Length: 272
Image (cartoon, rainbow, N blue to C red; front, side, top):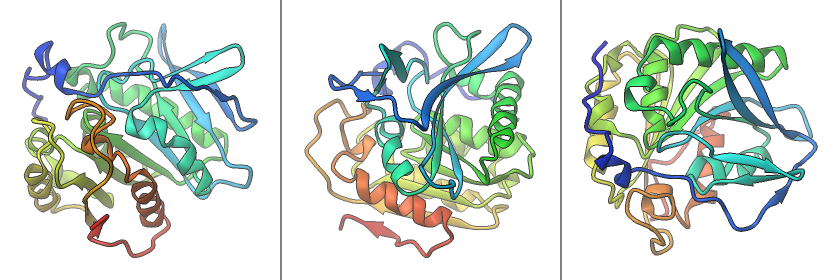
């Protein structure tokens, strides 16, 4: 397994999604709670679990971008969500009848998840335990969904985590050039790629995402959805409130991901 290059060091932190807590809070819903899952000796992973009122059609394990740490907090019975695309839209997935489990960085990674950790046996152990926890709650089938640097986790796990409970992978705003250096031809699960044509993040160019699609030769099904348009960016090009985070196109992106998981036909483009 090829390790990623160290380009995702301190300098690149300026180019990846970081946590910016929303000024508004949302009440903790009956089906929404933070769980602490023991994963390795002395290590735990916090998971924000949100389930719909009716039985979930599937459960999405969400891997935010950046360092993947502190994307949600609970204070005084209220849960605060970060602006990362998958985090801020997680209630929208629940409204589609899907359960979501947002994965925090493990307790042993005080500075968050580096690219190297996302490509490690320890990461596999952690997520396997999270999947065990979700399965024990009767939440299945299970899909892994990542955005930006979170796609490094999803791609690596799709290669190395051989688990029949996994039914598919979703890569949004992916680091296609880096992931393309992995042995992605070993991924056999269905894969959905969603990318904004005008994504201005230097490490997530649109054309590299297109090239990644062609490298997924072992997948049973690959769909690529090009997103166009949206609202004017309110942040830097690699931050959440920009085309990189599908600003202004959140509802359409969530809906098309939910449709793909439901086995429906999905369009090649949205927002055009």
